[in-house]
Image 1 (tube, rainbow, N blue to C red):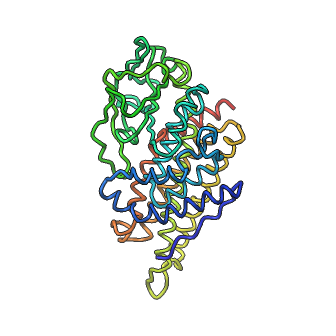
Image 2 (cartoon, rainbow, N blue to C red; image 1 turned 90 degrees about the horizontal axis):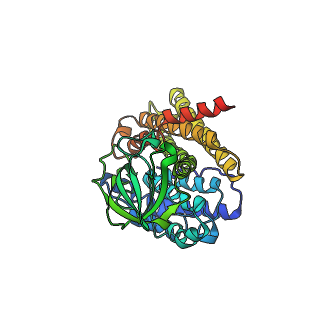
Image 3 (cartoon, rainbow, N blue to C red; image 1 turned 180 degrees about the vertical axis):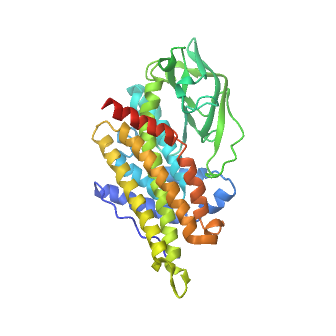
Length: 385
């Protein structure tokens, strides 16, 4: 099949244009050849993240003072989108890593940032974000994992669930309970991956994102130095919510990239596949279908970029982030399902990537807050006026 056309982008600087071109080169040269086999083997692509790190793509939205890329969020998200057109596991992994760096970058002291952030965004380390628990997913404030102060340490006990990079990560941003005051009793700790008492369960066997390791993470008398408290004690829920606004935009960008990849595959097939003496794309029923697919991709891209630009301007963007996550992931589910339909029987087999794209799209409607939760968030914003 012919190569997919390059998405037309309106970027804010020549540096951003060069960064997107570098990303496309990595997608073509590093990701495209590995994605199908790694996903089929449920193989975690750790060396791919190291390659992205060396290229400067694991710290894009963070301050150059600490080794980050100093890029606007609208540029960072378009990098995620480009990655997701071929390999959503990698794009989601970069998004999760960025999410795990957020608490320190935004709420840490100057001393903490200077001490730890350069290594976290420098490309060699990979992060994980620990919020959900077996009995507290959408209701994150009901968490029970607890940290008790003991001299110069916190001692942590409990279990986190559905942790992307669980057991693979070099550091964990952990939300845990330090008092019984509900949401006000939650704090944030930054743990090295080799912390004693920290262990990961057997990776989940998932419908999609098979190359992305997702596992429970357990804490059994894990001793964490008290200077690894990020923000103030009791500030963790505020940190978690602020992190999730940015994380939702990351998932929205991943969803648009996934949908774009499915659209590209469907168009390439429909232009070449001939029935009744003509390309199937010339049939009105199918051309209308791909027109709807393309419209949803463009609309999703515009929505997440507008939310990102609000973030970059320092404006409130929580409502827009929830809208983008909701719309883009629902659109990805529709577009990838339609891509399978365009390919017919070939869409249902592993010889073509669209069946994998459809399985991956389902997960994006669930992570970073289910789409039902996004509707609740949007509704609350609207009720406040």
